[in-house]
Length: 365
Image 1: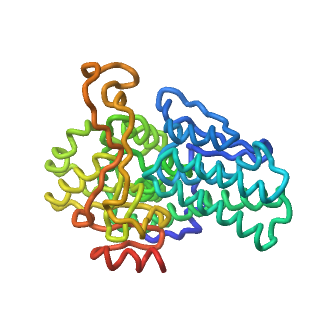
Image 2: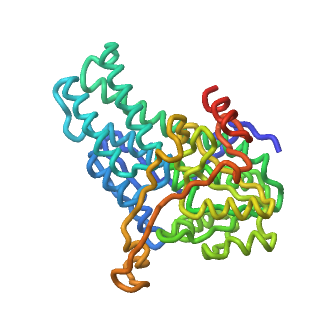
Image 3: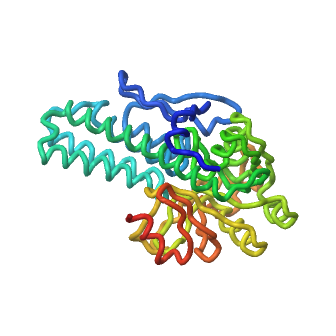
């Protein structure tokens, strides 16, 4: 089914709005994803420190959403305590970048966004586009909004490309939450084709693993899809192999927190397992991510896999489920080698193997 980007933009009206910038108050309002689905609460933030903490505590999560949030975090470096001179403004922005970058080291969108904002600020000052701090603030607000707008357009375009991989009646297996909550737009990356298909009247359903230990699948993906009226079935993480073996899945669509130039995909822990099983059973495995998620410089051994608090595994929402003090290994992400990836879907097109040759052709075009 053919559909235009313009048509989708005109008709897309998300029920969930995870990130809201209040221009009058110079504050960023985030839907607190750590409280979902039991409480729908919002947190209002006004400085880089508060925004960095919200990222670290996963009140906002998902690589694209973190990038948008960090961009506005850079704006608040100048609005929360407005500097007098442009030189002082650059110093504040440099400090804010360090504070924000420390929040989540694996998600490349975070450092991409903060670098983009800082480099733009330096350029505006050096080239005389910003003759005052207030002018610089206005320019950076524009840039942060553009990151949000570009992200939404990229997701809509990914939805269009991903639609090529969906047939009427398909069931898609995903992992974690790569929907609109993860991207801040209300649409998503891995769920973009699903939501576009649903908008167009194509029957499609989703199987969502719970995604321990933070349960983003059961708490967020299920909540998001049910809000949008899209059929979804929740399974335990350990049931992934069986549902694929029984033919209950037509394809796997996941997001990504970082993709390397050779096609290695870093995504939520459990993704590698899905990819290997899908490969063994002949089920297509697609990673969906915007161009901003690609890291063309790092090698796979260079990427730091974030590890989190052991109590996230020892407990569920504070309730102990294991012997106190047991040793825990709690990696947040895993890495899927390119041999298990059928294709990578971006806003610029679909990338097929060999990835070490084709990734740059699409990303850099």
